[in-house]
Amino acid sequence: MRSDRLTIAGRPLGSRLIAGTGKYPSIEVMDSALEASGAAMVTVAVRRVDLSRRGEGSIMDVLEKRRYTLLPNTAGCYTADDAVRTARLGREAGLSELVKLEVIGDEKTLFPDTGGLLEATKTLVKEGFVVLPYTNDDVVTARKLRDAGAAAVMPLGAPIGSGLGIRNLVNLRLILEQITDIPVIVDAGVGTASDAAIAMEMGCDGVLMNTAIAGAGDPVAMARAMKLAVEAGRLAFEAGRIPRKLHATASSPIEGTI
Amino acid sequence: MHPRKGPRRVGDPGGVIRLFVNGEEHRAETGLTLAQLLTRLELPAARLAVERNRRIVPRERYDDEHLEDGDRLEIVTLVGGG
Image 1 (cartoon, rainbow over the protein chains, first blue to last red):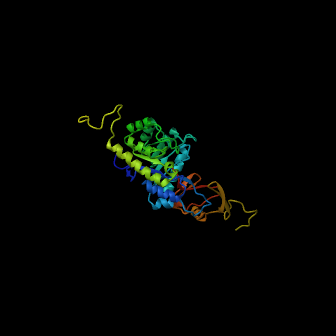
Image 2 (cartoon, chains in turn cyan, purple):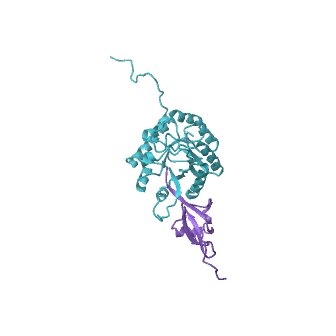
Image 3 (tube, one colour):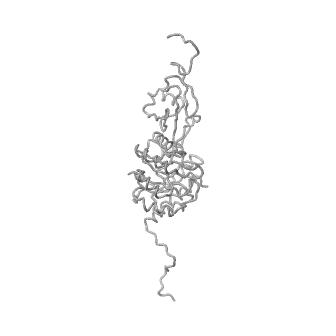
């Protein structure tokens, strides 16, 4: 969907940058960084309550106070069954129909198990979830997810936390070419500001990142950089870039040279 | 009430039940409700989800859900994540 706001299942968001809430050095830094990023929606994970830390502060105090839209994820799930179970728990805990669906197929790369992902997407769509699947950069898988009722597709740029940026520009371009009725959001692998700008310049509808901000030397500064990068990339996309040419075309007039 | 014949056993009415909460064994009295357990564990019901024997217990049922011997509970919340 190419409109002025990133809109997911009919809900417009205030930012095209979606931020994760993990891996921060402290809740205070997370709070400042998220604010600097301008994110409107943030991801959270579903985990057992730590029974020994009763009544202590949690990130939820901050997230609720700042009124972020919550996007529970199914991180750590390696089967469709686990992902569905986790999604249901996330919905119950977060009071939200949204879910970032992860079904992981490989421990080293955390690449998705696309078969399990597709199966879980179908199940959760039937149960009324708004499913945002974290997927690979394969256009065939993206189409299947779209046809299964996903509210967006979220192809990875590179392995989660790797900071390698968009590894497969061609594949991502193919997805953008063929998926035009739901948002395409790059999720995973962003390392620095230019990676986010590149994704947006190509025509992506949004970018989701966690480690790039939380793991930066100065997370608050990086969050601000990312906010600007996503905006710059989007503006450049909408402005219509010049074509790439092999040879030069002079910028100054030829006539009147002395 | 008839006199008891032997030592009190887990699962006896008026006795003790064994629960598994997030993988840990807990003892509680028979008939304890989920709401009472959460209070005892100092867990506010907001932002929690509870699974009892693999089925999610809706929030509005916490006061009516009487726990039984051998129940396996998963109490989860939302934490930081990407």
